[in-house]
Length: 176
Image (cartoon, rainbow, N blue to C red; front, side):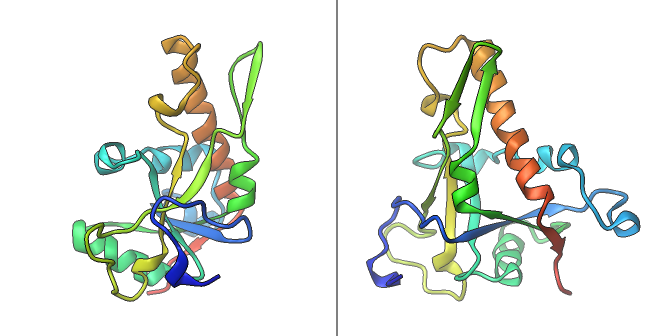
């Protein structure tokens, strides 16, 4: 992939993996595994994610941003961050997630992973900055309009739950 040709808000290729930093579950060091339900709160969008255009859940493309670089960016915004668990998801698997709003209908193809440039006016050239990306499709404005508020809420929760399930299969501790 030629990085000089990548456009802001363009889809990230299926073959990529993306990472996100999360807080360690209390029993992680003892059990060395994570349950999906423990990760669901870590996949809640921040206020910054919700207010961005388009709204997205921030991630980093692994081959462009190391977990350590992602942590450094996080430290710039939140110096006391305790997010030391690296969640890793395959882009193709994210796109395969099928959401369920109620027992009657499923919603495939709602999620996508796009490039989200950190600096819009001038491209951020710091090490790892080019890997910033985001998952779109988790927010009200991107859901089918025929859904009731309750169905939309259930669908968003189901999508995050399925992302947490994917993340629970491939996570590891950040190297100190």
